[in-house]
Structures are given as C-alpha cells and as structure tokens.
Length: 485
Image 1 (spheres, rainbow, N blue to C red):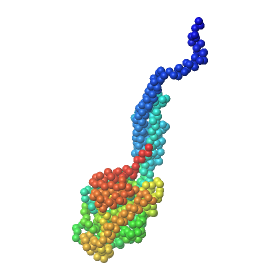
Image 2 (image 1 turned 30 degrees about the vertical axis):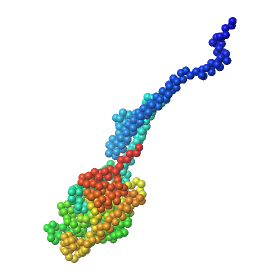
Image 3 (image 1 turned 180 degrees about the vertical axis):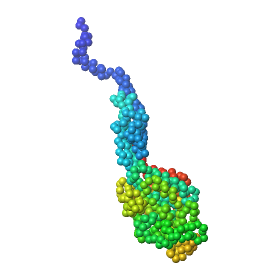
Image 4 (image 1 turned 120 degrees about the vertical axis):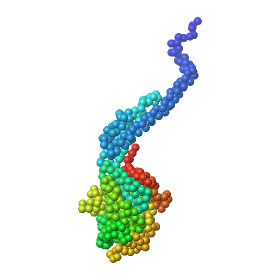
C-alpha cells in the first residue's frame, strides 16, 4: 500500500498544504503577549527616561544661563578695567564650561555705554533618549547686558530751610546729596551727565548772572551796602546785594520755562528765628547758595554741597519751578549765556543743553526732597527804600509787625501741583523722584511729595541716615545696569 504521507519538501511544494499552514499560523496566538510586553516596556523606558534626560538638560541649561548672565554683567560694567572678552571667557572657564562659547563675545563700547552679548551652547548626553535615536541634547544660552546712561540731565532739589537743622537732617542731606552726585557724575559715565543743584528755602536763588539774564529788576545797589549792622544785636550784618531771587506772577506757573522778564527782586528779610551757627540771614538764599547749573564733576558738586547754609522759609514750589525750567529746552539760550568763557557757570560741553523734550538720547530727571510743608509767602510791609534804612532793617529782622502775607499757603501748594503736572505730562517724559524726609505719613508734605512723583515707585519716605541709601538707590536707578535676556 502506498504511503499517504509525503516528504516535507513535497508538502512545501503542495499549494493546498501551504494554504492550510498559513491559515494555522495566522490563528496561532502563542507568544503574542510577550511581544506586546516588550514593545510596551521599551516605550515606557523611553517615556520615563525622557523625563530624566530633560530634567538633566534643563538643570545644565539653567547653570549655563546663570554663568552667561554673570559673565556679561561683569564684562559690561563701565568700571571694568579688564578686557571684556577676557572677562567672559574667564567666567566660563572657571565655571567648567571653557568650550561652551559659540563664537567670540560681541562687545560694543562707545565710551558712554558698553554692551556685551554672548551666545553659548552645551551638549548634554542622554541616557534613555538614545533608545529613540537621540544621543544628546544641546542646551543654548544667550545673554546681553548694557551699562550706560546716555545723555542725562538731572535737577537735584535740596531743602535748606531752617527746620533742616533739627535731628541732624542737614548733615544727612549733605551726605546723601554728595553720594548721589558722586554716583551720577562718575567719570566712567563718559561725561554725559549734567547735574543742576537747586537749593531752596523761602525762595530759590537763580544766581546773579541768571537774574541779570532774565531781566530781573534789582533794588539799588547802595540801599543796604556797607550798613554797620542790625539795631539791637551785637553781631555785624552787612547788606550788600547778597541774594538774587525774583518774584513770580501767575503766568509763570503755567509755563515750564524760566520766569518771565522784568520780575522784581525778592526783598532781603527774615521771618523766623535764626540759628547763626548753621544759617545765613534771609528768606532768599544768599548767592553762595544759589542754583548751580549743569555741574560735571563730583569734586565741584561736593565742594558746593559742603558749603551750603540754611535759610528761612519753605517755598518748594519755587524750587520745583526752576527744576523743570532747567530741563526745558527754552532755557538753552540761558545755558549758552552761562557757558561763556568769561562766566564759566556752565561747562562748555553742556552749553547746548537742555536738549529737546523728544530727544531719544536724553533722559531728564528731577529729584526733589523736603522735610516740611509748603508755607505762605511773606514779604515786609515796608518796601525796601533808601530812606530810614536802620528802621527798615530793624523792623525786617526783629519786628513781627512788619510781616505781611504775600501769597497764602493754599495758593502756593496749587502752584506746586501745577508745576508737577507740567513735569509729568507725556510730552515731556520727565522722571520725577520725590523724597519726604522725616515727615509724618499722610501729612501735607507727605501727600505733596507722593502726588508729584511720576510713579508710586519713585516716591520715598525716609528718615535719618537712611536718606543716604535712598539717594544712592535713585542714583543707581539713573545709571541703571540693564540686563536683557
């Protein structure tokens, strides 16, 4: 009998057998779970490992970014004496990333500012993502820092009223103002910052040269010159033309410029008691405590501030008027006049200031401090005149019955607010910083300063030696070291 079983090779060539074999293989489920498990396990390893690899990547990227930021900050400093590129490379080398820099650091230094830009990248080897064909991840970092102040015009307004003699206020103010001046007038700033210092008491003295330029009308020079002194005192007080304040009228408070021409001189007089050891006589500060225009060096500012003397009264609105006027481009002819070699009251490099309001390269700033409320403006009832000089002097200094109210306090506050509004108009873009020094919260002076500031962050209430820190902080903001990531 013929064997029904065919050899295996014969079956393989049998079409019907092959069809049955393929059908059987398709129905066979043995080992399918193992295959699925292997696929899922590999996927889980990749997904779980991906989180680990990305965490390592982000940690390394953050470290690299931190090194990059610190490197450009140090390299961009205008006080940095080392080569900026060397500084950057040294930072990366010391951090363990000597090969991370992508190209050389880019340094732009025009003398007035310095910008340093750095690009870097770091390869992070993967542990798990390589299962998906990713052997490494590249962590990039980019940092750019600029230090520079461009062109800056600053009006620093200092209260030298008699109340500043209490609680060491005047001494703290002098120290704070000197620290401020040394910061903003640092030679590293490239000579682009001008600082106008505006001391004020009952009035503000623009100085004899500016008084003449504005067409101020003086009392006769011989009126009090050479007088032997004041009746009823043992001290000799001589009364030549020692001050140069001008009266202002209503229209002056609606303008950002200097007071109009032909204004009368503020009389020489005193209202409140005087502490002669630290104060000079007069409602109007004497000429040696008059406005100093566009100062350029710390030494010049330091010498002037150290020589300041206190005076009578608090007329903050007058000081704010001059603070804005010395930033107003309409005052440029006055600066040109003061810069004449025969006068030398403005450095020649600043003769073309104040710049236009819309000059994109110029920042204009007012820093205003006070320790008290704006008061009424008083004037002697007996006008200064050549007859009966001794009587006029004695009544002006010693006699309260010779006091006459010139403008009430409410009107003066309104004028102050009007000037603050002018300064803060968008067309001018003046940054107004205000400092309420040793005043009570929510007092009149506190509210006046707070409302005048350009922004709540630009208002400061302080006391004691903390004033130095406040002024230094404002100076640092002005010379801002900007980090752009």
